[in-house]
Length: 384
Image (cartoon, rainbow, N blue to C red):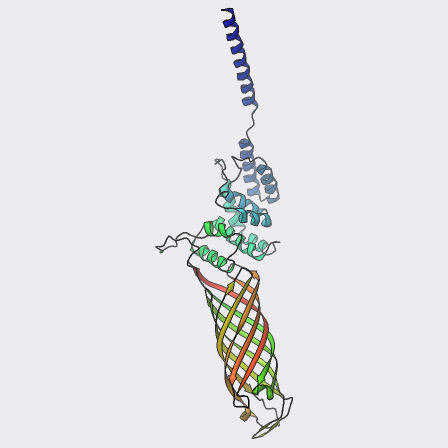
């Protein structure tokens, strides 16, 4: 009996001790959620005051409180804060890192107005933030994605943003931001669309562009017996649908006469200048279309126009003028060095080969030209 009483007393003492220990831990427990709540409240005040440097300090401290179960901010709140604190490089890395497994940051839904204040502040400083993005130390694609993300945070996804997102992936198919763009910026179904197919399919991209170039080359065949081609200035307009490109342009060619030409009104001396023009139309297809590089073989037809200008007190040499029909082809290489919301800038390197029938001893002439130019392409419309 005494033994049972002793065991009962020992059990009660142990239980009381354990209860007292838990009671003390509960009394002294300072949950991180309380500190997170205070940090959010302080951040809300600083945002209203415009103290963005202090906002960054609060954000950095609050993030030290997170654990595997809880975060002080939702993903959109965190990105909004990083925009306001100009942490563009870190923000770009975070956007690139998100996927199905880590996009959602579980956070306690506090009864505060931080999300509302962040959205209002972003809209208030929208123009200033976009101006700051121009000077951010990040690559051009990241600048474009950050601009899209800023609009998405302020207004959510819409048809216009969807078109910009589709256009971005069309020129950046291997983008490190692909998951975020497809899953958040693109709308699963556009207004008036009956398709629920993933937005990454069936992209139709319309664009226009222009290229100015300087080049050089040579003539062979019958024309080479009379003319020497040593330089050109060209301008070209193009329209592109997906990978198919249609172009129209003209080259102003610097040529001179390599032998005497006798006309009905006089003789043109060797070394005299001649004005040559090459208007052309081509169709091409982008066989390679990567994020920073693309290659387009093309074929077309062109004219080859030779004009022999007269000067004051000299005979009229217009009887020596002539036009030729030329069949041309070649390959164009584009190296992208800058991109924006609505288009891209390229360094263009092009080789062109042309052949034309002639009445000389050889029966034909050819022209070879290599040019280097600057191209600007603008996206007109993009949809899936």
